[in-house]
Amino acid sequence: MKIGSQVSAYVQSSKQINNAKESGGVVSGSKSADEAKASPPAGSTSVTISGRALMLSRLFLTEDATSEPPVLPGSQGMGQYGAMLPHHFLTRDDRSLLAEMYEFADEQGADLKHVDRLAWDLGLYRQRNDGKAIANFNDGRSYDLEGRVRTVSFTDKDTATAERILQSDALNSTQLDQGFLSYILDPGYGFTHGSDFEFLEQMVTRFSSRGSEAATLDPKFSTYVRIENNYILHTADEITLQPFEPDITNVNGVWSVTEKGAAAGITLDQVIGNTQRSLATSAGQEQNQYILDAFFGKSDEKAPERGLLSRLIELMKTSNTKRG
Image 1: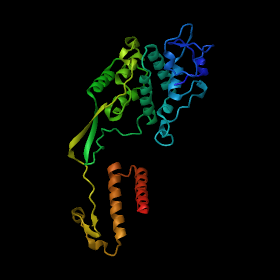
Image 2: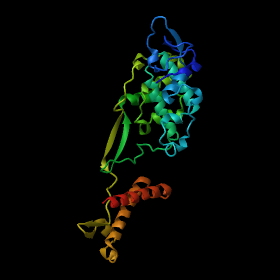
Image 3: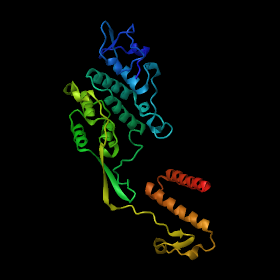
Image 4: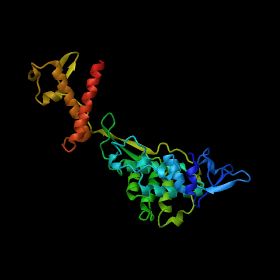
């Protein structure tokens, strides 16, 4: 991440950054924030880089406080601003706290990617309207292709860390958003988290009334290892979502009534005089309705969403017909 000439505006008391080529306390624009922490050559001068400068550089690719992007509304995070990066939804308080985390992590010699990943998770929470825009994976409505319910859990290590955080004395006074912590530590929401829960635990304590208990970071945070396989997927044995079965079918041009249709009292005599196209349309609409019911249930509470998905299905069918 490049730190340019404006970084002098953020000179504060934090870790020493060395620069042999520039004067006036400015870090050369040819060096990144990480590179700037290298050992100085003989005779070099040194300046300090604030946590705010690191936050702006790493999250928004700028060194100028006047060009910091505005906070985007999470209420539009999955719609109008769906293509924006999560960082743009971080609140002013989020950004201030992350700046302090960057400064502390930098002082402790930690890999700043730990803070980057925490910022990403927090930004996603804000982009999803503080988590309200998405469903919990463990709410019983996720199925595999055979109709069996799927759920997720954290690994044993992450489960233990999440429990420690939620039961810690620091939880009530931490500056980290309580809603975010409840969200990210719930496997139904946080199973795809990118941040290290043990690093998160350190930040929860450090920025609380018990901050003295986390005065130093564990040396293991000096390197960052990308988290892989951080959740376990469980699949139920019982099939609870039955596959779609139409009332009528067409096999090799021959129409017939299925057992389901017969049980409902449907006969081919009822459709005499209708074209095969109308029969196909009827069957297609029935399948569309099945899909809609599976997504939204059979109530009318989400009529706009049902209508939009129904229209999308019809457009896809029309497109496929034209290509055929």
